[in-house]
Image (cartoon, rainbow, N blue to C red; front, top):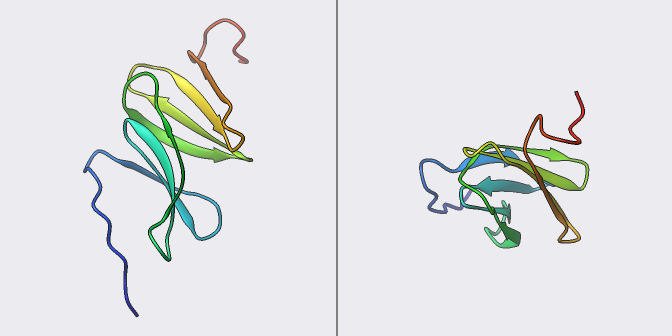
Length: 90
């Protein structure tokens, strides 16, 4: 079995993505197809560096070292907010 290798920064956060894909985040977030290494989509992270990411339905949620949480949805919509700020749910 042949294994594909791709260079990533040691600080890159990795999360399971869609079937057969992985999400990688640092100062941007991108989905990469595991079998080919092809980038499926990418988006910049507007504030800081990713410290955690999670798949939530069709969106990827990114928490940054600046305390900003951004939801990036497949349609290109991004929604940023401060955790615990106005409008946040308990």
